[in-house]
Image (cartoon, rainbow, N blue to C red):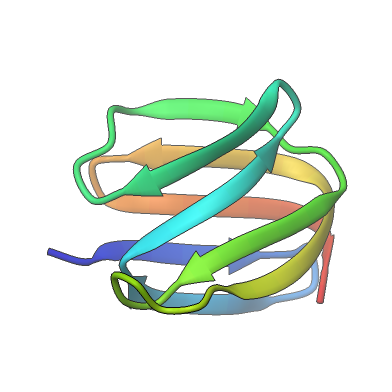
Length: 84
């Protein structure tokens, strides 16, 4: 099953899609999220989110600056101060 991923900035919703995995630059270190991940919340540091659309696919990098990442039973939401 795919992971529902949303990337939101104060200005707008940038992404809302089903993906295989997302790697997030957490303030305590990078962490990967797959479907079924335990609920989790972390602040994020400036860096790149890596979005793997399918298993084994090369990731797409999205630059982010600050914010929060929240994993729930619905998926992963990244609330970034800046992204792009």
